[in-house]
Image: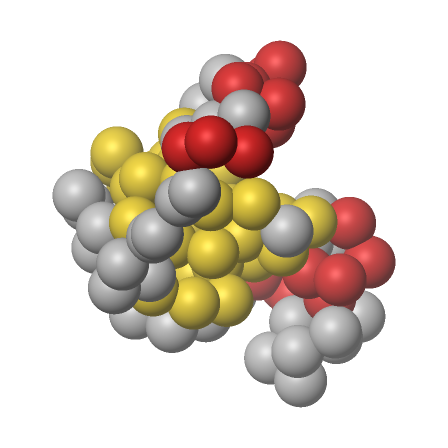
Length: 91
């Protein structure tokens, strides 16, 4: 999992039947080790919106929710983050 900021949304009128009724959002990872791919598209399972900081599950972990089981999902927003506290001396 990684944290990201929601920066936009995607409208797709034609999509796989496993994605019908889902909201697709563009997320940008917050921390350097996850920024290899820059911004990505994730399926929203928690009602996130643009500007929010979110927790994103990837790979098979993204399909573990009942909502996405059996769907072609690689990234899923599974939480909205209220606060991040870092110990900067650890870096």
